[in-house]
Length: 77
Image 1 (cartoon, rainbow, N blue to C red):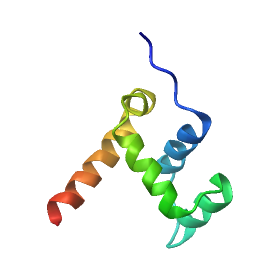
Image 2: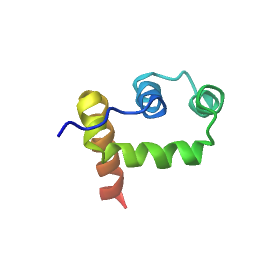
Image 3: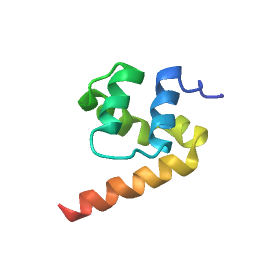
Image 4: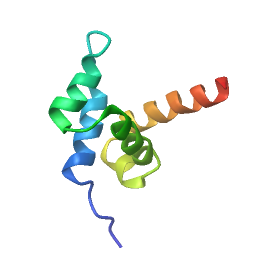
């Protein structure tokens, strides 16, 4: 059975993660302005996406990079 594709908001979250941001606060501003989300909610949704096989199929490079970052932060604790 084929999985449902990512919804537009999920795709937008991954697209935002692919971009580079020039300085502190720029990413949080983009999250609010472009997605209409509070940064905390954005990171909750992003974290759930990293465990979603549909996200991995949609953008394996970004998802795998973010998974590595998440794991390195967990191992530092």
